[in-house]
Length: 615
Image (cartoon, rainbow, N blue to C red; front, side):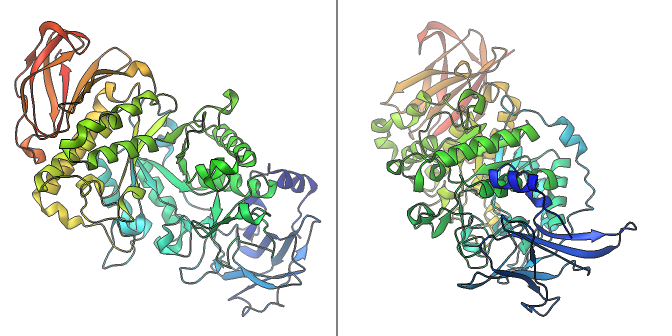
């Protein structure tokens, strides 16, 4: 019989068993010839009085295969002398008070919804071909990072149905190349019962959702993305769980993984239950899970959802700091970066809590990136206003630079900004049809040139009209219309520029990488700034937030010489009015915008222009 030793028990209880999947779940045992000869099931359920495994292999008979309690902490196990690969199963638990049917918390596969049973699956045997990616992967801080956030169930569909991981990946790769993204962020791909939760209310943390195929199909998808040079980030939710009866919630009739206190446990806003991250067994479960995705699926990092809900109880600072959760985050980051110091660990955090992206050794939480929710809120609020009123809201654009270097930020226009009546990036823009697209291009230009790495939710790169609907494909037919095709071209071109110009990414997290040239032109709602690279090279960015055209505008620049305009969002190919600086711009002596020289330039309506000193 399988043995669970005292050392395993100690580390599991202490939250330091980082390979819990080695012990728990279902396992196919092979003889020396490699033939499957038996199947083992092991589960943690200390409050159970009786526990058996039921499934389609035993007619769901609760008495056919009883597990034996092999340790006083509550670990149960059984080895059945059958090859049960692909079998459906659940655990039947009798607590003495109630009888429960539970999916396996450590199962690596599950039947497709609406079914809720786990399935025995063999993870071993996939042959990876991403060694070049793994060898050449580097720290990203001074590199371009442009993340495409994707919900696989609605990026594309085929005749209204989901497309499998391995069938979708080639088209996805082609598109990522065309659009000049560097990484893809997948909204949660572990098992979840409700499509409408978008994956954020999970029941199977170790199981790649069966909606899109088997787990090895996901391995193939990630493998192919790596082979073509794209990093893969997973959305991961360690804070709260789905309350469906087959899931982790009250797993053995008690709040085994959750808070014991009801007020801490019940997340009424989301209808979920908060996990108690101070419990050792919960930590062992979650940290082992993060390592599981890194080791078995070669993912390049995680975006951790709802970090505010972890920092403060129920996400409300008035409830106090949750020190147990903070200790968990520090432990998590320490373990993950010890495993792979090149990963991305991103916090979706709306608080002003300090040190989120500082290393644990320097008193921080240990993330290496934080979503800049302040930038997103301020900028979208500003752009929503009619240009005639923008001069009174100038600070919505400038304020973000007062804290832009306090953390290592990602600038997110995520799925949360295009649902629940908010509109899309395009439709929240003011003005007529032409002005909406011009405003949209200016918004994308600001996002691409502002300090911080980039994240954009699918569909927004071609100016989606409709709010995101998880139940259907994106409106790809919009690319048949010139306005959307032109908008899409602008996103692609400015992301290529973001790649090519070191000044736009090398010093994203350092004050030396940015200076305001003009942050005070409220009356004309014009902003200008310079972005610098490590070698001192720079670009000048000029944003016009009104429909007014300015001829011979005197724009201060950092050095003498001749400048050329390397992109202008008002060019006809992007859907603009065709007003741009086609000729080289020579400097004039004179003090402008804190500089000793200036150029005379054309500033187009609702536009962004980027100038570069000609060599």
